[in-house]
Image 1 (cartoon, rainbow, N blue to C red):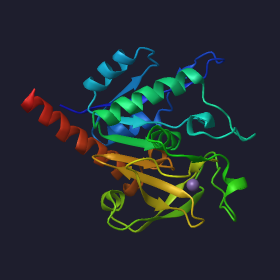
Image 2: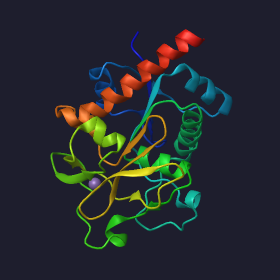
Image 3: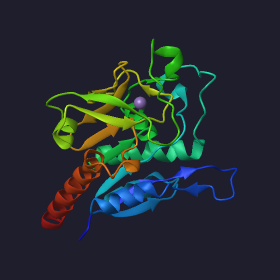
Image 4: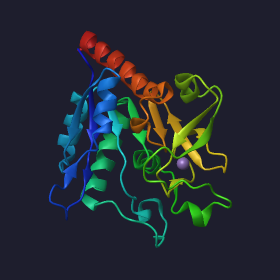
Length: 239
Ligand SMILES: [Mn+2]
């Protein structure tokens, strides 16, 4: 059986179709051998935990900005807040997934979400807080910057290289890493581009789902699905 991989959705209450997921996430999960399923916004915490117990892995997708009050900061004028309903659900989902050691691949806002849930902080607006910062805020296309992977990190093991080219579509970044998280990649300007934690928790600031034609980016999804498959096999034997 293919492992079941949950993907959280974007949510824009004022739009005609408020709940949606850019197709690249589900496509990347499928390409890597997983069965993708989009997750709606659920308000009941018990139901969120029940949902997590049915999944074999999780992709935390991109989004807007988290409320800086969560990590004890005042809001920068460039901050564009995520819908509170989505942020609330995402925080419950992430906490439950980490508690259950569900394999997680966290992307962009998803990486920032994981960091904040584990008590870390964010840089709210890179151009104002990082001296001589690169341009990280390209929306689309093939604009890249390089990232250096920390040797011996899980990420470097998955990717099999010390340096790769990534896309970049973020104006925020990880500040202080949360509890149990270590830095696994940085951009040349020092911006943290990836974190990793215990079990399988890989968080990247770039968008590997848009770069699956390059094996080093598809490799992140393949690693997630491999872990999810191992975990579901163990559950089947013990449960
Ligand atoms: Mn970047």
